[in-house]
Amino acid sequence: MMVVTQYGNPEERGMYMEGFGVAIIGCGAIHRVHADAVLNNGMGKILWFVDIKEDRAIASAEKYGGSWCTDYREVLEDPRVNIVHICTPHYLHSKMAIDAVKAGKHAIVEKPAAMNLEQARMMAQAAKENKRRITINFQNRFNPTSIKAKEIVDSGEMGKIRGVKGLVTWFRDTDYYVESGWRGGFQTEGGGVLINQSIHTLDLMRWLVGELESIEGHVSTRALKDVIEVEDTAEATLYFKNGARGIFYATNCYTDNSPVEIEIHFEKGTLRIYDDELIKIQDGKWERLIDGISEASPYKSYWGKSHATLIKHFYENIIDGAEKTIIPVEEGMWSLEILDGIYKSSATGNRIIIDNSL
Image 1 (cartoon, rainbow, N blue to C red):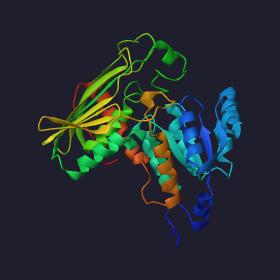
Image 2 (cartoon, rainbow, N blue to C red; image 1 turned 90 degrees about the vertical axis):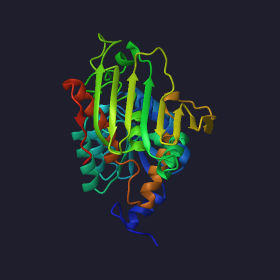
Image 3 (cartoon, one colour; image 1 turned 45 degrees about the vertical axis):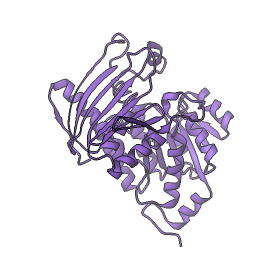
Image 4 (cartoon, one colour; image 1 turned 135 degrees about the horizontal axis):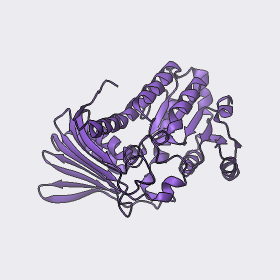
């Protein structure tokens, strides 16, 4: 028997079972990861590609099939479209997602959820009022290393968490910012290394360890002061409600894109995520729980390899009418909350109390 949920009636879910009508908004580099995922999971058909740059929209439509346009509002008027993938610059995320759910579409939004907490709250409210789902693309939660680490944390087998460490040391040059037309400015990117390169790491730290109580941090611009107005380096100390303490460092000033490192220190040992490996250190012995051997990816390594997994789960989430959305906007706000705390702490020199009532 089909169960009616708050997200749709039986006829609507029956339509989804025939396959989703999909539109991809924004045809920059990351959109092809979404397009390939849709084609490979067999659960939807891409009907539209949208980009303000006509040549990019046309190229994607020719490569993958489907129609193209330069105005996303045209797509939202198409009754065949059930899901939109929002792969646009940060400053467009909240507006497009809100417009999408008001038009009766579900939306998957590339990180960050929005430019700030206020915009994200509006997105969450719009999804609720319109009985549609918005999921935020924190795909690294679906990495095998992340899943296993979360399993161990939740089991309590290694005891209480004492601390967590997150390190992101990457490289971004002048061309990266200049060629984009939107990166490097607070009004369009919303920040620098915090909101763009290291937001996945902050999300994982919060997801794995728990709610924050307070944060103290600092941001600065060092390597590209004459090019960008946003920060290229950030550091923080995170104080969690469960008593754990975290340290975080991120920079775009290194000369290479090193693997991200997350380490969790427990009463009975340590877990270390490094690249695609998960290592357990206990009683002086090292055990490789995830060996890091994986299939080669045609995409940039630092994008992660779990976009397709998240997108598949999101589609299934809609079909099943599950009560909870996969990584809803409310969870997408966790990292924005940390960002907000670091910026405020850097500006004032004070430790910032975190509001967990979001």
